[in-house]
Length: 238
Ligand SMILES: [Zn+2]
Image (cartoon, rainbow, N blue to C red; front, side, top):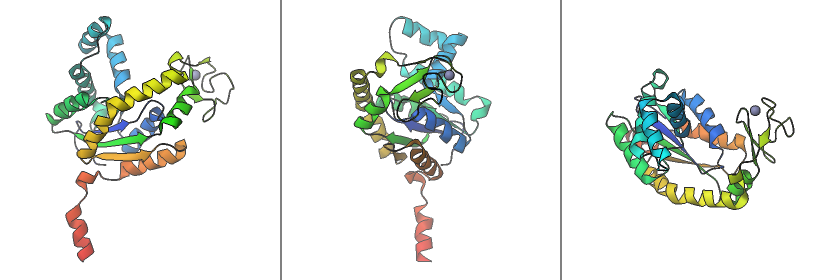
């Protein structure tokens, strides 16, 4: 996929448990663009006490959601950094159609756009199975799974030796609710980028390696919107 300006982005979409974190790093490396996770950015701005971070904190301290325009402002600020001169891979945003509308509009002001939206599609049954078995490292936040990706160090983190723990919201009934909320909010986003001709679906119901291969293939494929239909027709005629 071609990213032409620093305000061109590739989205990685997928429910909690779709394995996005791992795949995002692979895809960003393949595209040679930074991996921009909106949640991490927000935390970083808050801890640095930037103007954007302070504005976000004011909402969060009141128990309110950070407005979409503010989150998109933080993302645009990140796109202006040197390593994003070819665009970026955006992870964790947009989650709602309203957020997608703000993102599209603000990127468009700089002649940028969402050039491709890669959706890692995983069935509800598999998502629940994966999330209910997830364990995280307290020290380095490495993620393991008791079935699919156990730590080589048993009940310790294989990377740093830290304690592994299970988040309360990784319990089965909480997991099911999280996934339902995600699908309810994000299906319209997937439909939106599908209608724009930039959606690439990847079957995420398989092992990490198979999914990775498909994501890399999707990255190498031009979005439907940009397929050179005229020259293809000329080749067939010739
Ligand atoms: Zn660790």
